[in-house]
Image 1 (tube, one colour):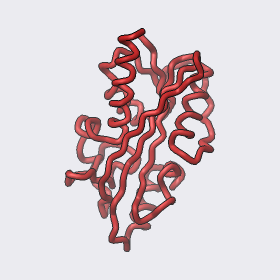
Image 2: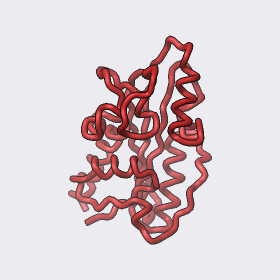
Image 3: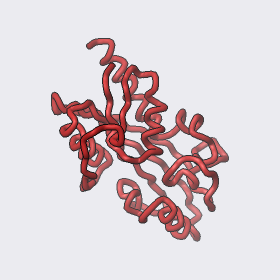
Image 4: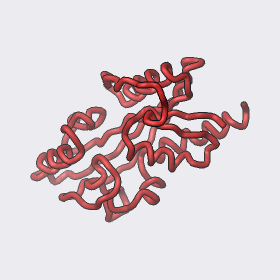
Length: 197
């Protein structure tokens, strides 16, 4: 069975990816499950793809395992250029980021937002990579709601729903999220690759 390394220490992200890729015929490992010590790379890219590739290459080249890395962000209509690819740097931790965003949005009437995910699959043996994008539109709640998920999940209400990602529960979130949409494209690619190899 093919090993697939997820280049992250984020337990919430790892769990979500492992759950979505459970039936793809790969053993999905996180950085916490391998013996090598992978240094946390500096995300110097200006696009989601550049940052995902930086993370995937570092982990893949050290371990020589087929590696996926995700770079994702929250794009907020009323705050152009402030989050997006720089979402993780918007505050010191999830709580800090949520408080800062709620404060920034206090007087805003435009509450449109979108979560974007870019998954890069990197093969250290060939040095080649594939890119898979996913996006979900929605709005920002006026207060934190729900205990599930991670990151901005307690504020993001996906289009067509009345609950935040944090209220939906992982089962439902994992069928509609930006990461799920990107991973579903990756699953199709891996399934085709497994059939032809």
